[in-house]
Each structure stands twice: as C-alpha cells, then as structure tokens.
Image (tube, rainbow, N blue to C red; front, side, top):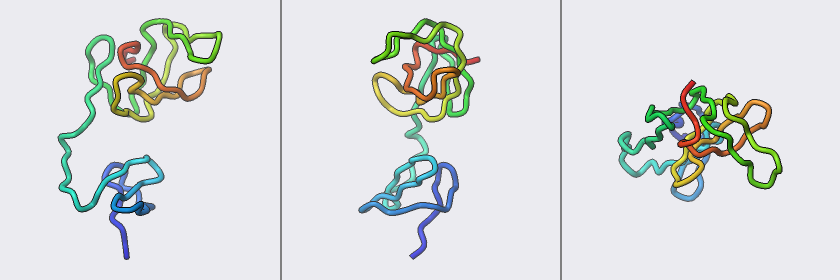
Length: 112
C-alpha cells in the first residue's frame, strides 16, 4: 500500500495513524478521505496588520516576558517563523535569535 505525499511539503515519508495521515517533516495531519479544502488556511496578522506566513522574518514590536524565566526578550529581537498554528495565544512557532525556539503571540511582532 503506497501513501500519497504530503500536500503541504510534498514529502514522501508519510505514515498512517488510524484514519489520518501524518507527515513527520512538517507535522501536517490530514484525512485522505475528506475533500481537500485549501480555504482553511490560518490567517495571522502582525502588530501592523500585515499577513504573516511560514518562513517570514519578523522582529519583536515590544518587550516580551518569557514564562518560567527571569529574563525577557527585548524589542527589536529578530526571529524566523517556522510554523503557524491556530489558537488564541501563541500562534507563531519561531526560532528567536539568542533564545532558541519558542511560541510567540502574533500581536507582539512585526514583519521585517
């Protein structure tokens, strides 16, 4: 049985988990029996109202406190968006310069 490639990143290494297919490279999950809806893209806007997408370079528009740490991230710190996820808070999975990977709320960043 051959599985279709990932519709998001076109990777061939896809595995099945119950009725869903999962791509280990981009963590995308989908049901091959359901119709493909490309209209369900997540829309995330930065502090200035610009649309953000995966791979965009961003800068922090305000100082952000880091939960569980006494230090924060200063305004102007650069980051790259790795993944956008749906949610009320912390929509952006980013790699932040000097701090590593973390989730950031979109309203605290602006497109670089």
